[in-house]
Every structure is written in structure tokens, then in C-alpha cells.
Amino acid sequence: MEAEIFNLILDEKHNHFHYNCGKCRATNEEFLNTKDSHLSKNINKTNINSLQCVECNKGPLCNTEEFFENQLFCWKKLANESEKTETTRICESQCFVYRDGNGNVTQNCGECPNDTSIDCATCNEKYCNEERLVRKQCYLTNGNICKTFDDFCFMERNSRNEINKGCGTCSSLACRKCLGNRCNDWKDKPYFCYSNESSNGVKECSESDESDCYIIELKNKVNQGCGNCSSFSDYIDCKTCKENNYCNNERIISKQCWEDNNKKCKIEFDSPCYIYRTPTNGVEKGCGECPFYTCKECNGHLCNKDSLLPYYCFGNEASYKECSYNDSYCYIAKIEINGDRKIEQFHYYCGKCPSNILNLNQSFQNKNIQIKNKLIKININNIQCAECNNSPACNADTFFESQLFCWEKEARKWKENKGKRVCEIGFCFIAVDKNEMGLVQGCGKCIDQHNMTKCSNCSTPLCNNETILPLPIKCHEINTNFQPYIKRNKTCHHIYGSCYIARDVFWRVEQNCGECPSKYENCVKCNKDFCNEESLLPLSTKTKSKITRTAIFTTTNKIEIDKINMTTKHFINSTAQMNKVQIKVIFNVIVLLYILMVLL
Image (cartoon, rainbow, N blue to C red; front, side, top):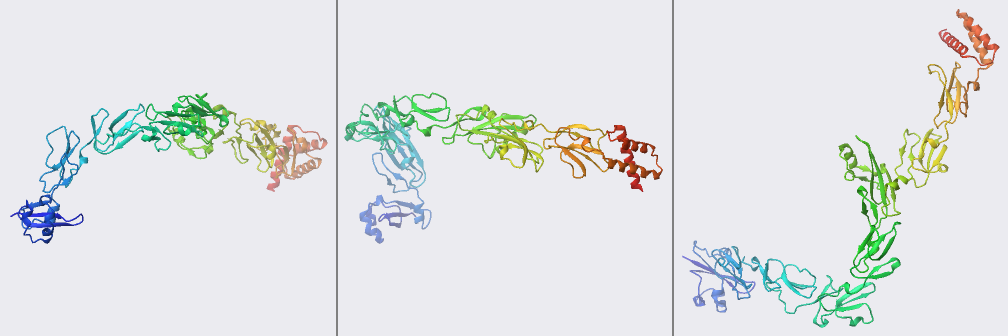
């Protein structure tokens, strides 16, 4: 047994389903005796064949709303119709849509025709056979058609005043576009002019403009639009044209360029304007081609503005690099790295000497892994760097070599290092720190240093070494550790300004550079070369008597002292210098006596 269900659409918001036994009815008369009040009330207003109806025989009570909603319905439209409608009966297999050679669309239930010249698509979902499944058609300039899914159809007027048509995007700004099938066939073919009033620079003109375009220079700007120069009769530089589409380009008037001091020059439209970075980092402007490589050309009206011109520096591998428009500085840094072999190479770039970590691995051609790893993290604060802004590409090797770098060293440091930044004061110094007793080196003037002696200034790169200090003092040197016990001549360190001679408790002589050591009671200092002679601290008569007495006192110990008495007697009888043999004998006797005294 079969059953039916059809959808009676009462209005846009309300549907009414009618259920019954049997197949879908063919005429309205079959519902004259219906007990359905909604159907009875509205059946005369509706053609039963225009209502969607489905049949089923799969079981009892099969004609449900859910069954109805799950059935396949398609869009229906004939080629000569403009509007599509819904099919009223179930589509058993699939829906189709195709566009014929005339661009007309047909939609229905079923399969595509066998005609391969048409675009056709099938689908199997409710109302899936939309027109967008087949390509739309656009007119071409020659009357043929092109096909596209989503692109525009267009019609444009080119610079020769010719009309072009096609699919896709216009190649010019003077263009109309549309999205319909074969929509690009306007009869009122437009014309266009360059215009300041349009966002894209081109305006479609109206018929009242009489197909004229104008161009005029007003207040240093070019004004363009539709119409003629009648509104600008007081201006000489106004031109009207109509020979082709958007003919009012700048070529028909003289182009202007900026010159120095805000003056202007005129030049043919196709010739450039230039702006030039001078050897002193100044700016020159004018009409024509660039006079030098640190220069920019442009082709617009009054285009050579200051913002167009960058500064120039040497970059990687000493090539010219365009830098920022508002930073005139360049820098050059000397990279020195020790590895299997030492690297000494310059790094060039724009700006001031950086204070951060740089990766210079790409800047140097080196295959040594150890050196490559060091180049990845270079702290520019720890290497020599100089900056300049007095001319384009001023950061050359010769500039670096001419800069004043100084040796730098603190008093307590053993080794001096090359200064990392240029000494702007113009002087290097080397001096002795009186408090720390060490050499100090750096950038500055001696008069600005405190607690310093022996200070010297210089003004050439790395000049502040010990060679510019006054010659150091020279002294005799001897101490008890010398073997043999013979004095020698010594050139003292610059931190010393004097010599000394001292005698210990045994009256042994010590001579050296510097101040008298605090451990000695008998010491004399002097400040001339080799001034610390023994004559500054001779053995006195009183002292000699003590020695004699000491020598006599030791005779109770049954020591052979014949030589001592003889030596002592000889010493007393003469205050002249003793020869080395006598001094040695006396020294040995004194040592022996001291040992005996300790033992007793």
C-alpha cells in the first residue's frame, strides 16, 4: 500500500504538511471532500502540481515529515527562463546544471546531456545544482567568449582609446568590472582621465565633460581631471587633450625638479631629477642624471625630496651600503681573533659603534671552526671601533688608521691593552701612580690627572708607551743573596725616582732602586744615576772600634785571632777605602763572632 505526503506552503513562514494514502494527486478535484481544514481552505488558491509531494511504500506510516525532508529535490530552470524554481517530485538519482553555447543555464533532475560543447555539472544533495557549478562566460574584444568561475568580466579603455574585454582583472585603471554571465557588454562605452579625485588615480568621465581631459600645475602639485582648461584660464601651465584615453599624463607639461635653496628647474618629462650626497655629507638637487654614485634619480614631478636620499657607508666586504635616511654615522671595527691562525680584519657598517653582541660569522670568509664559533658572538664593546659622519663611506681603513687610540692600563694591572674607542680629547698619557706605584696609561691630558708623577702626553695612535717617559734612573744593585757577592749596574723601572744604599746589622751593603726599606736603620737615598755609592754610608771610627772590641772579646774562646788583631790594627790606622780582601776577612770574622755569641 502506498502513502503520500505533500507540503502546502501557506506563506513564507508557515508550512503545512498533508498526509494521505495513495500516490500524489494529479488534480485539485481529488481534494474536494478532504477533511483537512487547512487543505480545504487553501486548495483552490494552489495548483496541486506546483506542490512538492513524495510517495512511499516501505512500511506502515512511512509518510513522515522526516521522510519528506530527507528526499532529493533539485532546482529547475529552462534555458529561456530567468528564474529558477524547486522541483515538485523526488529526484531519484542526481541533479544537474549546464550552460549552453549561448550562455543560458538549464537546471533540473537527471544527468548531463551528451553535448560536450556545454559546461555541465551533477550533484546529489538537495538543491545543489547551483549556477556557480558551471563556468560563467565573458565577452572578449573580438566577440568570442572566455569562461571563468569566480573572476570578473571586464571592459576597459586603453591608452590608445581602444576598448578591451575579457575575463579576470583589468590591465589598466580605466576599467569597468562585473560578476554576471556575459555582463561586460555595456553600450555606453566610457572614457577615462587621470584624476586627483579618484582613489586609484583614474576617473570615469561623464558625457557632460565632452571627452576632454586636463592637467595643470597648481601650488607645486599636478592637478588632473575630466574636462578642459576653461576653469583655469588664468594659468599658463594648463593642457587639454582628447586624442586618447587618460591622455592627461604629465608628459604633456614640463616636469619640475627641486634645486638647492628650494628653487625649481624644468626638464622634459622623460628626463630624471636627482638628489646627490656630497663629499661633505651635504645635499645637492637638480634636473638631469646623477653626477656621482652617492646619488638617487627619480622620474616624478618634484620627486627629488630629501627623504629620497640615504646616507652611504662601507658595508660587508667594503661594498657601498645605503643606510638610513636619518642616521649619518658609519663605523669601522677591527676584529682581532687568535686561533690556529690570527685574524685581523675590519668590519664596516652603518650607524654608531654598537654596544651589543653581533654575529659576524657571515661577514668573514673563514673555514676554521674555532674562529667561526668566536665570530658568532662578538661583543663590540671589547674591540676597537671608530665612527664618522663627515662624508659618504667615511668608514674606510685609512680613516681607522688615522684615529687616535691609546694604550690603556690601570696601576695594578700588569699588561696594557689597546683602547676600544677613539680618544676624543686628542691626547694619550702615561704616568706613574704615586699611591699604587704602578704605571697608568689612557686617554687624557697630564694636567687632568691626579696623584701622578712622570706624566707624558702624546697625540699619535698608541703612542703612550714607556718610550715617551723620561729616561729612568740607574742604580748600583747588590744584596746578600748575590752569588758572587758583586754589585752590578741596573736600569730601574719608571716607577722609581731614586737609589738607596743600606747596611744591615752585620754592616753588609744592600744597593738598589727606590726608597730606603723600613727594615734598615742605616740607609741613604739619592736621585742621580749610580749615586748610591758606598761612600754615602762609610764605616765610621766608632763602629770600627766596636768591631775591634768584639774581635778582642772573642779571644777568650781560644780562637786564633792573630789575623784579626792585625786586620783591626790596620783598619784603625787607616780611614781610606779597604780592598776587597780586607773587607772579606772582616766580614768573615764578624759572622764568626756572631755565631759564637749565639752559642754562648
